[in-house]
Length: 346
Image (cartoon, rainbow, N blue to C red; front, top):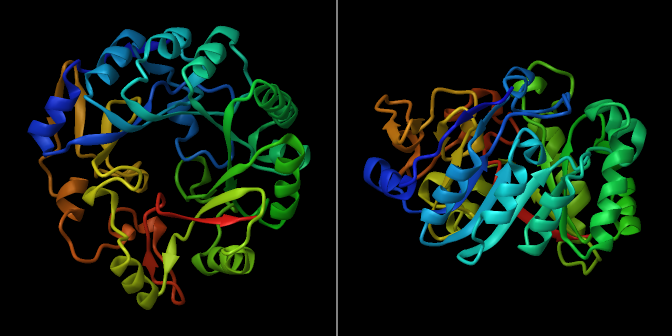
């Protein structure tokens, strides 16, 4: 049985009053329920098994309370397993949202909710973590590749706006050319890469890459394609930088999310299904939440660990100050925001 919580109806005002945030980028974990137990999931099996969710009526009401949003992202768990998922996509008012997104493993197909998400123009961000059934299922579970690809092809046939999301780890890092081929065959033109993080189920696992290994992959894969005109737009995180690279990035406008969203001129907040409020995903699992939802209130985290206190208005900021597990190495000592991404054409 799901345990339901409410979002405060006046959340925009509460965030402005308690933390000085004017949110234009809202990332909402609507529920923790998931039908998969992926080896690399940063949320972790313990939370996925707790079956907590935000009441759909309160989600619709709260999202509508934002005067406008540049970006709304709904995810879980698996958002299409929310007990009132049809209500979410039927009633969220997207007229004041520039880009509405839903992240899903797409192994399930609730007809009504999918139809409403399509009708309202949601971007479907579909997780594929292997170019073949063997590699994908090794991470996500037996049969998951077949289900996801079948439903992905259905979405393509319905002219959905789709972005495939792919978490790079030690098990699939050599498959990138095959992944591009799969995307072309299915008809995908947008690919969003993540680097596996040592959080949740991946903590202490053999899936993670060293900063130098990741940058070697990035340099070998994308540097020569930056000026290309290939058919697939690939967004990828730099994640780690030399001191000189970091200086150049800052001069070009790089910043931490606490200074403003990468997808908006306003602020970003991430609301976990447990009620914790963060600015960035690198703070997940830490004591750096900026606050907590308690009934119809937002209780500010007054400790020095508060992510806003630790990051805002600092000339230089290394992500490992929030999460030491994300620290760089000797060659690439500076850890960047996991959400800062470059784009290549492949």
